[in-house]
Image (cartoon, rainbow, N blue to C red; front, side):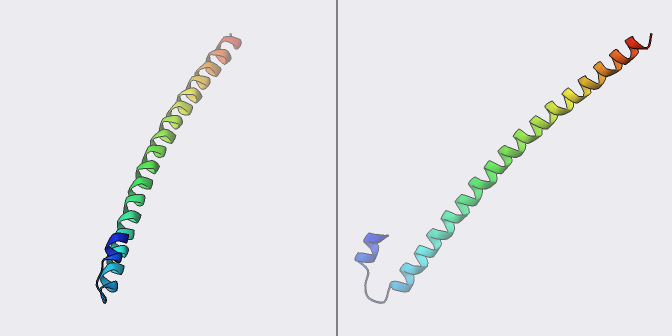
Length: 73
């Protein structure tokens, strides 16, 4: 784009400005896509961790029931 500015004709500044704005918007859109992908990945990790916590909680409850049953006999 810098080369295009150096070789541009007088009066073409609005077109070059528009091209720069389009390039900026494309860059922002790409960044948003990358952020969305990163957030989806993090959500997957959190969901997986949540499943592990629930399994551990269920196992702890089962052990508690077994201990309570054994002590009450």
